[in-house]
Length: 165
Image 1 (tube, rainbow, N blue to C red):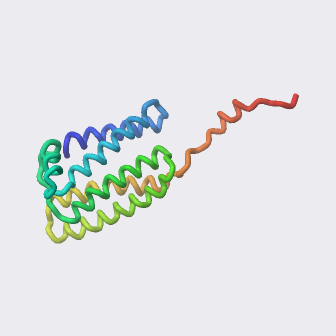
Image 2: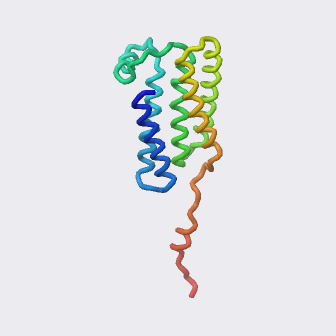
Image 3: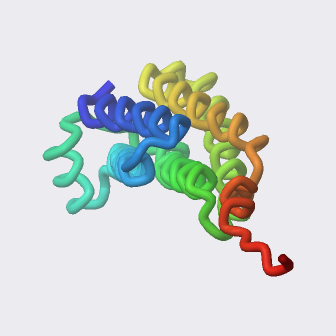
């Protein structure tokens, strides 16, 4: 596991704890950490044929990645599910639509990597499939969270002014 990935995962967990306890700056930390993970995964699974992508990966990742269609699809699918998780947690508009697209992309990535792993038994594909299953599991867990921000009735009662006296 890369240092950037580990830092982004820890920051995401801290941001989720901050958000659970309604502490300040939770949204900013969550947005930055999930976007950092999405960018990391999109760079990590880039094609080796592209010379610009190859240079970027050599600077940040310093590891060679297999060049198959499954890896390319996962390079697009993992960032989509991460951004849709971010939209769902932050209660952004159209989060549900993007979330369904992200879950579909994650399912497709998982299916393709599972098929290719059983053909080649490659360690890289096993690590990729583990990442997909963890992120997809989080996505399935968040599937059952309500899509709209709950109304806080205590604020409405305190701001209510009686007109009839």
